[in-house]
Structure formats: C-alpha cells, structure tokens
Image 1 (cartoon, rainbow, N blue to C red):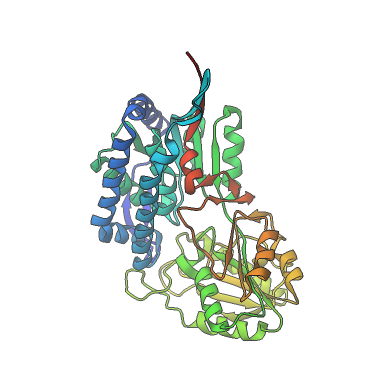
Image 2: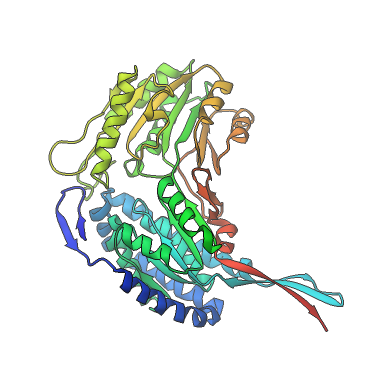
Length: 454
C-alpha cells in the first residue's frame, strides 16, 4: 500500500497491508490479553494513558510533520490537532474514575443494590483520516481506560500516524496484547467486521457507517457511528459586525480544507444584510493563502484525496448551471498536488447539489432568506443531523432556532467546534451513539446490577 503525499503526489513510503490471517492473529493476541488488562487497577491504566499524552507533546513536531505529509493539512493545524487531542485525553484522565466507579443505589436495606461497570471486551475502532488524533483519542483512550483491548484500524490515508500512535502507546506502557494496529484499505476493515468483536466504533461516511451497522447487526453488540453532515449556519439581520461574522463562518468552511464532519456546509443569510455579508465573505475568501502545508502562514493545504477534486468540481458546475453566482474559486490548483481553491457560490437554492449533498471540501453556497421561519425550514431540509449554527445579537431569537434543530450539537455565535465535556453525537444519517463527555466514557463499558442480601 503506497502512502502518497497529497501536496506533491510523491510516494512517501510503502506499508504492508494486513491480511485476513494476520488480522485474526492480532485478534487472538488482544483477546487473550484483555482480561488481564481489565484486571489491572484503573489508576494504573489511567497513568499509562497520561504518559501517552506526555509523549504526544514531547514528539509533537515530528508527529505534526508526519500528519501534514500524509493528509495535507497545514502544519500549524496539525500541531493544533495534537494540542486538542491532549486536552481531550486530559478530560478522560480526570473524569473516568468518577464515571466508572461502583454506584450504590440502596445501601441501608435488607437487600443492598449497586451498579458496576465492566469492559465490553475487544473493540474494533475503524477511524478517520481527517483528524486521526482527535477522532482516535475519542475512542481508544476511554476504551483502554475502561479495560478493553482495541484493534485500531487507521484510515489508509493516515496509516503513518496510526503507527505513531501504536508506537507511543507501547512506549507509555500499554501492552502489545491490548492494542494492535490493523493496516490496509477496505478488505482490512471487512476482516474486522467478520470477527466476533464486542463492539464497533466507526468514524467516516454515512454509506460506510450504514454498511457497518448492517454487517454487524446480528452480533447484538454496541455499534457507534460518527458520520458526516451538511451543517447549516444562519446569519440573522441583527448581527453587529458583519465582517467578523463572515470571517468566523469562512473559517468554519475552510479549516482543514473543509474536510471536517462539522464543517459549515451551507449558509443562510437574512435578506436585509445578505449583499453585505456575501461581499465580505467573498473578499475574505480571496485573501486566503493556499499552498505548501509545511510552510508557515498557510490557511489551506491540498485535499487529502485526489478523487474529491472531481466531486467538488461537479457540485460547483451544477450550482452555476442552475443560476448560482460564482464569486471566488471553483477550480483545482495548477501543477502537482490535490489543491482546490476556496470556493464561494451565492444566490443558491436547494435544487443544487451544493446545498444538499455533503461536500467535504472548501466550497460553500450562500442562500438568501426572508425570515427565521424560512431559515429554519431550509436548515431542516436535510437527511443529516450533526450540527447547526446561528449568529445573532439576540440569544432568545437564536435559542428558538436552536431548539428547532434536529441535530446533536447547536452553536450560538460560534461554529465548527467540539468540547470534551459535551457529548458528540449525530442524528439521522449523521450517526448513532455519542463520544466525549461522561457518555463517551460510559460508551465503552457495560453495567452489571448487584442484588446483595446478607
């Protein structure tokens, strides 16, 4: 399997893909090791993950450079991702003991009652390439703290980062018979689905997530799916600084070249300020710096996958053909690398693919609305339900819109962010279950009820 640098199209290295037999061997290894790991004191498991976090900091520059070389994000964004991952790990380190402790329900009675929390067993973590550290630690850190063994399959586009994660976990004291990386493309993922694992945790597309759910349904084990979105942002007419709101929305569109499940994917603006907002947005989009992601000061690097270029071009062409006004970008870059310009299309509507299909790139459609009711109707016109953002001076007005959103997350005067203390969950085609918060700690254990008499 070739690892290709999306900025240069050069082959970085080649990695041997796991076979069905090698994956079975790794499963047998971690299945044998999991009971002893679960019997290890919780404080010891937590301390090993604390060491892992420290190693992420100690090797941050090398890890960031590897991440940038294989996925294409600007190196400062790679450093930001590592910093964010450590903050999430810190949340799990500080809160797991509380949420995994035994709970006494009845202590002073002839029959005492309590709840304990036990590991699921061996889980499969099929992870994503766009934020391999952030989405990875959401799963394997609380899974390991909870006493599980993990078969971790990084995306083929982030394999080197996955191998770094394994190396540093081992260095921190996580046993090899508790954590194993599975390398490869689709067949490696299928091999995991065919194993009798005790839980499956996936981050990626709706299509693949649905397939995983269907393939594992008969096993009756936990399945959590963190899938995509078509996340809307609504700008009300009472915002005071249109330039600032346009800048915030633009960052939500183009950060990591728009390759975020919670990236802003469609914008609705009230008609009274529509023209001013669109102009401010387009002006700022044209000022973004796109280029070599290892150079300082770059706002965007290349896309991670070559095939995404044609997909985005088709979305933009469809919008323009149906009356959309192209104000910035719209083209792939010249020369080597999977570059695509920051792209802004105004005067769009829901007949256009740009406003209904997940883009997963630095492209955006901006649509005019007459009032809050029209905005809400359009924001809800989607099979996805991940996030929705509202910009307004009035919390009361924004709150009503947020309450109307059938999404796992809502934002007021911010967008495209995740907090370790809050659950990260999707509705409808955006996923099942929740990571992060105390719910993301409890996701990797199962309750046992004790009835104690005597």
